[in-house]
Length: 266
Image 1 (cartoon, rainbow, N blue to C red):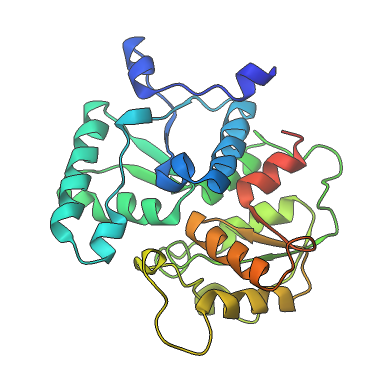
Image 2: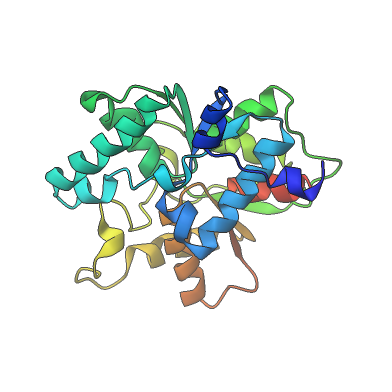
């Protein structure tokens, strides 16, 4: 597959104009669209989708915020305005299945849009990647560059405790043949990165230590050289924590999609 095809992205408007429907709609999210660091995760996931032959589309400029930050911050009116607007667009295109790399978007689309008339099969990209691996649509070519390397995985609150998704990310990491080492607090007892519940957008509260520093210390305590994340909020908080500890040259914070793409030479 050439470079142009591996990075090809089609909008729903373009697909609908041809009278076609996607296998899945890729909901990019605000971070995946505008955050310079997370745009690299979006690019990695798009390469994987194209490499696996997944027929997908994005909304492009028709996609807006899900309303998650507004609802967590207590602005229910703004949330419903944003949600209803998105649902009108999604229903207009008769969208059936959505995949997103953001657990916050995932939780809102899956659990909170149905009460407003938005009913879709919503899948987080960790689960989608696991299915692609199980179906043999993506494989780690030869020996993964992460083979035998220590990787620790940080459970996102909105993926783990909110939606009980713990195994899919770990099964994706197992495919890399890496040495998965768990932090002191993991899975149902995983420690928040400090960004959830709209905390990402406000000053830290009084205390002796930032939450993301505490979580980063747990991750560094494993001795892992890679901290795997599956959430843009967590990636920001953990990356800041690694910088605070001056470990940027030794420890990388990478999303699952980036790990899979790198392992496949994408």
